[in-house]
Image (cartoon, rainbow, N blue to C red; front, side, top):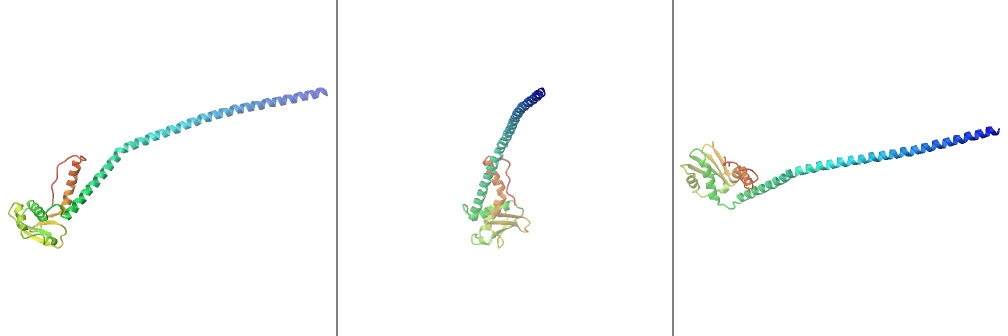
Length: 216
Protein backbone atom coordinates (compact mmCIF):
# COMPACT_ATOMS: atom_id res chain seq x y z
CA UNK A 1 0.00 0.00 0.00
CA UNK A 2 2.82 2.32 0.94
CA UNK A 3 4.69 1.36 -2.23
CA UNK A 4 1.69 2.18 -4.39
CA UNK A 5 1.25 5.56 -2.73
CA UNK A 6 4.93 6.36 -3.19
CA UNK A 7 4.73 5.39 -6.86
CA UNK A 8 1.66 7.53 -7.36
CA UNK A 9 3.40 10.46 -5.65
CA UNK A 10 6.49 10.14 -7.77
CA UNK A 11 4.41 9.92 -10.97
CA UNK A 12 2.43 12.95 -9.95
CA UNK A 13 5.62 14.89 -9.21
CA UNK A 14 7.14 13.89 -12.51
CA UNK A 15 3.96 14.95 -14.36
CA UNK A 16 3.95 18.31 -12.58
CA UNK A 17 7.66 18.80 -13.26
CA UNK A 18 7.18 17.90 -16.91
CA UNK A 19 4.26 20.29 -17.12
CA UNK A 20 6.37 23.07 -15.56
CA UNK A 21 9.20 22.40 -18.06
CA UNK A 22 6.81 22.48 -20.96
CA UNK A 23 5.21 25.65 -19.64
CA UNK A 24 8.64 27.24 -19.26
CA UNK A 25 9.57 26.16 -22.79
CA UNK A 26 6.35 27.64 -24.12
CA UNK A 27 7.02 30.92 -22.30
CA UNK A 28 10.63 31.04 -23.54
CA UNK A 29 9.53 30.25 -27.08
CA UNK A 30 6.78 32.85 -26.86
CA UNK A 31 9.32 35.46 -25.72
CA UNK A 32 11.62 34.55 -28.60
CA UNK A 33 8.76 34.64 -31.09
CA UNK A 34 7.64 37.98 -29.70
CA UNK A 35 11.14 39.40 -29.91
CA UNK A 36 11.55 38.08 -33.45
CA UNK A 37 8.18 39.52 -34.43
CA UNK A 38 8.95 42.87 -32.84
CA UNK A 39 12.40 42.92 -34.45
CA UNK A 40 10.89 42.04 -37.83
CA UNK A 41 8.16 44.62 -37.41
CA UNK A 42 10.68 47.28 -36.52
CA UNK A 43 12.75 46.38 -39.55
CA UNK A 44 9.69 46.49 -41.80
CA UNK A 45 8.64 49.78 -40.23
CA UNK A 46 12.09 51.22 -40.87
CA UNK A 47 11.94 50.03 -44.46
CA UNK A 48 8.48 51.52 -44.90
CA UNK A 49 9.58 54.84 -43.38
CA UNK A 50 12.60 54.93 -45.67
CA UNK A 51 10.44 54.11 -48.67
CA UNK A 52 8.01 56.90 -47.80
CA UNK A 53 10.91 59.32 -47.31
CA UNK A 54 12.46 58.33 -50.64
CA UNK A 55 9.14 58.81 -52.43
CA UNK A 56 8.61 62.19 -50.77
CA UNK A 57 12.13 63.29 -51.70
CA UNK A 58 11.60 62.18 -55.30
CA UNK A 59 8.28 64.04 -55.47
CA UNK A 60 9.89 67.16 -54.01
CA UNK A 61 12.64 66.98 -56.64
CA UNK A 62 10.02 66.56 -59.37
CA UNK A 63 7.96 69.50 -58.13
CA UNK A 64 11.09 71.66 -57.84
CA UNK A 65 12.05 70.78 -61.42
CA UNK A 66 8.54 71.68 -62.63
CA UNK A 67 8.64 75.00 -60.79
CA UNK A 68 12.08 75.86 -62.15
CA UNK A 69 10.97 74.93 -65.67
CA UNK A 70 7.90 77.15 -65.31
CA UNK A 71 9.85 80.21 -64.14
CA UNK A 72 10.97 81.39 -67.63
CA UNK A 73 7.44 80.80 -68.96
CA UNK A 74 5.89 82.81 -66.14
CA UNK A 75 8.43 85.60 -66.58
CA UNK A 76 7.64 85.69 -70.30
CA UNK A 77 3.91 85.72 -69.61
CA UNK A 78 4.20 88.61 -67.16
CA UNK A 79 6.48 90.53 -69.52
CA UNK A 80 4.05 90.02 -72.41
CA UNK A 81 1.14 91.16 -70.24
CA UNK A 82 3.03 94.32 -69.28
CA UNK A 83 4.01 95.04 -72.87
CA UNK A 84 0.43 94.53 -74.02
CA UNK A 85 -0.77 96.84 -71.26
CA UNK A 86 1.76 99.48 -72.31
CA UNK A 87 0.78 99.18 -75.98
CA UNK A 88 -2.89 99.45 -75.09
CA UNK A 89 -2.25 102.60 -73.06
CA UNK A 90 -0.27 104.11 -75.97
CA UNK A 91 -3.13 103.27 -78.36
CA UNK A 92 -5.73 104.79 -76.03
CA UNK A 93 -3.69 107.96 -75.58
CA UNK A 94 -3.25 108.27 -79.35
CA UNK A 95 -7.02 107.97 -79.85
CA UNK A 96 -7.69 110.59 -77.20
CA UNK A 97 -5.21 113.02 -78.75
CA UNK A 98 -6.68 112.52 -82.22
CA UNK A 99 -10.22 113.11 -80.98
CA UNK A 100 -9.08 116.19 -79.07
CA UNK A 101 -7.01 117.37 -82.08
CA UNK A 102 -4.13 117.73 -79.68
CA UNK A 103 -0.70 118.51 -81.10
CA UNK A 104 -1.59 119.11 -84.75
CA UNK A 105 -3.27 121.69 -86.96
CA UNK A 106 -6.49 120.14 -88.24
CA UNK A 107 -6.82 121.90 -91.59
CA UNK A 108 -3.25 121.01 -92.53
CA UNK A 109 -3.95 117.43 -91.45
CA UNK A 110 -7.00 117.26 -93.74
CA UNK A 111 -4.90 118.42 -96.68
CA UNK A 112 -2.22 115.84 -95.96
CA UNK A 113 -4.72 112.99 -95.51
CA UNK A 114 -6.65 113.75 -98.70
CA UNK A 115 -3.64 114.45 -100.91
CA UNK A 116 -1.81 111.36 -99.69
CA UNK A 117 -4.79 109.18 -100.66
CA UNK A 118 -5.23 110.84 -104.07
CA UNK A 119 -1.56 110.29 -104.95
CA UNK A 120 -2.17 106.56 -104.61
CA UNK A 121 -5.46 106.45 -106.52
CA UNK A 122 -6.08 106.37 -110.27
CA UNK A 123 -8.14 109.04 -112.05
CA UNK A 124 -8.38 112.82 -112.07
CA UNK A 125 -11.74 113.57 -110.44
CA UNK A 126 -12.24 113.00 -106.72
CA UNK A 127 -14.72 113.76 -103.97
CA UNK A 128 -13.35 114.53 -100.52
CA UNK A 129 -16.10 113.75 -98.01
CA UNK A 130 -16.02 115.41 -94.59
CA UNK A 131 -18.25 115.45 -91.54
CA UNK A 132 -20.85 118.21 -91.36
CA UNK A 133 -19.11 119.30 -88.17
CA UNK A 134 -16.18 120.44 -90.32
CA UNK A 135 -18.21 122.96 -92.35
CA UNK A 136 -17.23 125.89 -90.16
CA UNK A 137 -13.61 124.78 -89.90
CA UNK A 138 -12.80 124.44 -93.59
CA UNK A 139 -12.46 127.44 -95.91
CA UNK A 140 -13.16 127.55 -99.64
CA UNK A 141 -9.53 127.08 -100.58
CA UNK A 142 -9.31 123.55 -99.17
CA UNK A 143 -9.95 121.81 -102.52
CA UNK A 144 -7.24 123.85 -104.26
CA UNK A 145 -4.75 123.16 -101.48
CA UNK A 146 -5.43 119.41 -101.67
CA UNK A 147 -5.07 119.40 -105.46
CA UNK A 148 -1.82 121.31 -105.27
CA UNK A 149 -0.44 118.93 -102.63
CA UNK A 150 -1.49 115.88 -104.71
CA UNK A 151 1.25 116.74 -107.18
CA UNK A 152 -0.74 116.25 -110.38
CA UNK A 153 -3.65 117.85 -112.21
CA UNK A 154 -6.85 116.69 -110.51
CA UNK A 155 -10.37 118.02 -109.92
CA UNK A 156 -11.55 117.90 -106.33
CA UNK A 157 -15.02 118.45 -104.86
CA UNK A 158 -15.52 118.92 -101.12
CA UNK A 159 -18.69 117.31 -99.77
CA UNK A 160 -20.03 117.47 -96.21
CA UNK A 161 -21.93 114.31 -95.29
CA UNK A 162 -24.35 113.85 -92.39
CA UNK A 163 -23.59 110.12 -92.15
CA UNK A 164 -19.84 110.67 -91.72
CA UNK A 165 -18.76 110.69 -88.09
CA UNK A 166 -15.27 111.55 -86.90
CA UNK A 167 -12.45 113.80 -87.99
CA UNK A 168 -10.59 113.30 -91.24
CA UNK A 169 -11.74 112.59 -94.79
CA UNK A 170 -13.13 109.83 -96.97
CA UNK A 171 -11.79 110.13 -100.52
CA UNK A 172 -13.55 108.60 -103.52
CA UNK A 173 -13.08 108.77 -107.25
CA UNK A 174 -15.99 110.15 -109.25
CA UNK A 175 -17.71 106.78 -109.67
CA UNK A 176 -16.93 105.65 -106.10
CA UNK A 177 -15.02 102.68 -107.51
CA UNK A 178 -12.05 103.65 -105.34
CA UNK A 179 -12.66 104.59 -101.72
CA UNK A 180 -10.01 105.53 -99.19
CA UNK A 181 -11.20 106.09 -95.64
CA UNK A 182 -8.65 108.47 -94.16
CA UNK A 183 -10.55 109.52 -91.08
CA UNK A 184 -8.13 109.86 -88.21
CA UNK A 185 -9.27 106.92 -86.08
CA UNK A 186 -9.70 104.66 -89.14
CA UNK A 187 -6.19 105.50 -90.28
CA UNK A 188 -4.84 104.76 -86.81
CA UNK A 189 -6.69 101.43 -86.87
CA UNK A 190 -4.97 100.48 -90.14
CA UNK A 191 -1.56 101.69 -89.04
CA UNK A 192 -1.68 100.35 -85.50
CA UNK A 193 -0.43 96.78 -86.20
CA UNK A 194 2.72 98.19 -87.81
CA UNK A 195 3.10 100.88 -85.16
CA UNK A 196 2.87 98.37 -82.32
CA UNK A 197 5.40 96.15 -84.15
CA UNK A 198 7.82 99.07 -84.39
CA UNK A 199 7.38 99.78 -80.67
CA UNK A 200 8.11 96.13 -79.90
CA UNK A 201 11.19 96.20 -82.16
CA UNK A 202 12.51 99.34 -80.47
CA UNK A 203 12.00 97.62 -77.12
CA UNK A 204 14.03 94.63 -78.48
CA UNK A 205 11.09 92.27 -77.93
CA UNK A 206 10.82 90.99 -81.53
CA UNK A 207 13.26 90.82 -84.46
CA UNK A 208 13.11 93.66 -86.96
CA UNK A 209 11.41 92.84 -90.26
CA UNK A 210 10.30 94.82 -93.30
CA UNK A 211 7.77 97.59 -92.69
CA UNK A 212 4.34 97.67 -94.30
CA UNK A 213 2.67 100.71 -95.77
CA UNK A 214 -0.82 102.11 -95.28
CA UNK A 215 -3.56 100.51 -97.37
CA UNK A 216 -7.00 101.91 -98.12
